Length: 233
Image (cartoon, rainbow, N blue to C red):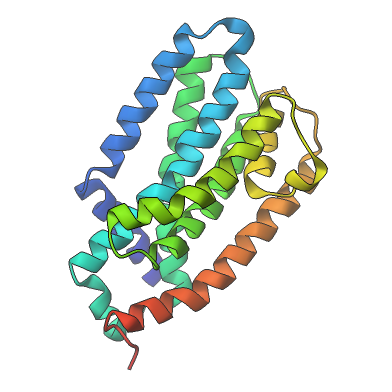
């Protein structure tokens, strides 16, 4: 009950500050782009769009959310909140991942208009978005401002994005396939029938990275809250 309340509040907060509008606006642009994209490139373009737009957008949005909460002094109430660190983290990640998953489904439904493995696609996007959102949340705890966040998040974003884009164009190396971005793209591509990489191994890598990110975030978030005056009592 406590977690569901936190999840609902997070979604209301994101709606209040226009994050859903941004998702809708950007998704509409990508649908339009796919509609005019040549048929032979549509699936590859769609896979990259799903990877870099809904799935990874949470990485940047969570930075804005953390800093908005920080500027409004909400972190100062952490000391009297019954919410555990892991509940806070998963609530933030799930709230954005749900929107990312819905946006991805709508982009494919209206932009691609082809049959595919929707359950595999949506499950992949949800899990991948969880990974990238938690990574973004960790980075946000080190940021002093939005500009500072964009600066320090740029290198990890490039590191996460470039390998899967290279894989989409047939440039791949085994050691890059274990990265979360590459694993997610291959899962998306599998659901679109443009890759035959077994899902089992890809899920293993993605869940592994999610576990690593959650463990680090669970240690980092309470520390960052304490620095901002929200030490548990």
